[in-house]
Amino acid sequence: MKIFTENFINTKNSEIVIEIKEKGFFKLEGALSPDFISNVKQDVEDVGISLNNNNVSGVYFTHGNQFFLTHMLAASKNFYNYCTNSKVINFCKEIFGQEFRLKALRYYENFGGQQMMWHTDNRLYEKSKKNETHTTSPGIIFLAYLSDVEDGEFQYIQGSHVWSGENTHHDYTIDYINKIQ
Image 1 (cartoon, one colour):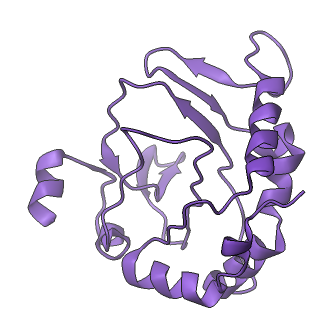
Image 2 (cartoon, one colour; image 1 turned 180 degrees about the vertical axis):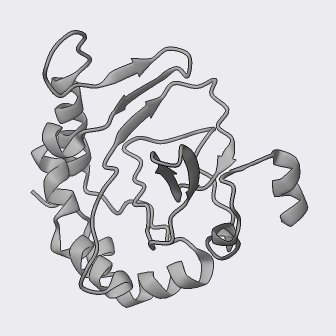
């Protein structure tokens, strides 16, 4: 089974890296094959929601009207194949060098009504100091939609990969975002 479409496979990693370094993101609609999307959705459905069970399962967060699964590598061989695909690995080597790690492998379904604050994902919690700071380790998020999003899609502020690392906080008000744009 093909994970990526030919359009994505034929996109040179060097072109992706340049775009990420300049804008902070790379976007390509239709990068994942329909079969891969269908298989991952089925894997998540098979794992389902489970309470008081010592297995990998998803959680339904009623306050946020959201389902999430934080252990996708354990739940889906298809997802594992995605993360360890040579296209992904070679891209990571090109942007980070030979040493990097893959982490935070999650699946989310949002059912509307949430309002997430503008934030960065470079948080680092120092348990011994009981405070939160930011990591200086470089990172990147791979974000893939498995279904269409009509309203409430991920929003990114172009260039924020440059200035957000200089801040000591991670959450931003709408007023702050409006001021810097």
